[in-house]
Amino acid sequence: MSTTDTIAAIATPPGQGGVGIVRVSGSKVWKIADEIFQGLEKPSATKGGTFLHGKVIAADGSEIDEALCLIFRAPKSYTGEDTVELQGHGGPVVLKKILRRCLDAGARMAEPGEFTKRAFLNGKMDLVQAEAVADLIHAQSDRAAKAAFEQLEGGLSKQFNALYDGLMETAADIETTLDFVEDELPNDVFPNLGKKLDQSFQGLETLLSTWDEGRLLREGARVVIMGRPNAGKSTLFNALLGNERAIVTEIAGTTRDVIEETLVLDGVPLRILDTAGLRETECLIEQEGIRRARVHSATADIAVYLIDSSQPFSAEDEEHLAKLNPAKAVVICNKTDLRHPDFQFQVPGFQPLETSLRTGAGAVAIRSAISEKLGAVSNAPVHAVISERHRNLLELARVELIQARNRISEEGEPGAASAAEHLRSALEALGQVTGRMYHNELLDNVFSRFCIGK
Image (cartoon, rainbow, N blue to C red; front, side, top):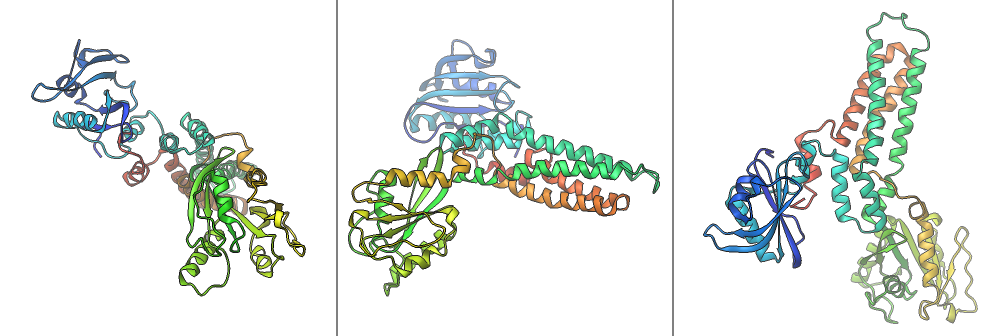
């Protein structure tokens, strides 16, 4: 991807709005702006940090739209390049005409994330901060947005840089020992190097420990509602969402497929899945729905299991509960207003909630129980957390760091050369997190997930 040409794109979401923005950045930006925009003075003669009021003009001299032209001069712009933003009316037809005018005047269409990629290449931000831009745009909750903003401000980058710098210093010390004749070094050299590696390892483990929280904030916690037919699963699904999303009838097996919706609970986005009732059936369609229910329950962050207390407690319910982890499960005894005299819950490890969803009783308690299971996230202070890409690279660095520690602790001076090699590999992985080390494939992978115009 060239960084010398000039790029343009619509920077506001599709659809209608009061204002729409077309962003143009690159070496030809003043030529293009002077050609297509008419105001009290030319954009090229206007100082940075100001704006002009005027009109966007078509090639034949006709007017396309009344607009503002915001002036950003390098390096004080988002990309670090000379940039203008044309703010016109927010209709899709008008914005496309302004964009087409920019392209005809010499710009090319920006690729996904190319503005932010140029910001990275021009030293305006590192890769971790660049990814925070996308996280902030796609945040599904206040907590996710705050975590992304802290990452954008450099909170996570500081931790990665401290880990990298510490390992770099230790690697340099180990490399230095290779220049000495055997048995010439003081006895405490390698024990001290081992302590430094231990400190770096603890810092790496601290970063890795934020992965689960990061996954929940970015992707949402998977909450699967399950149980036997007619236990009240779809009723609970609707109650959590606050609308009649799933069909509710007294006919067993009404829900055949998995229904998924999202909501935010105590700052954590949830992906709520309503599933088919678990039972033996001859219906092939219902069998497939039950299979899918089991698959989703196996990967759930929280399983909400409903039991119909208007019937005697069944061996089937006990069998299903035996497959659940009590730490990740909320058990609900529903229909308590119709409780069967022989119903008695006796499954060790679970503390069921008693509710009557038909009357509306218990919905608040169920929300609180789900939130409590997610307490490690919902009750923790907001801070920047690692992503899947960060986690994969940290795991690579972790393997190499363990090998380096083993070489130093077990072999001492004879293992220094091998330890140094492992540390180089660990540093290469860590360098790719923030972009201290990068290649085109890495950048393409990161920025291809951005929207066009950012």
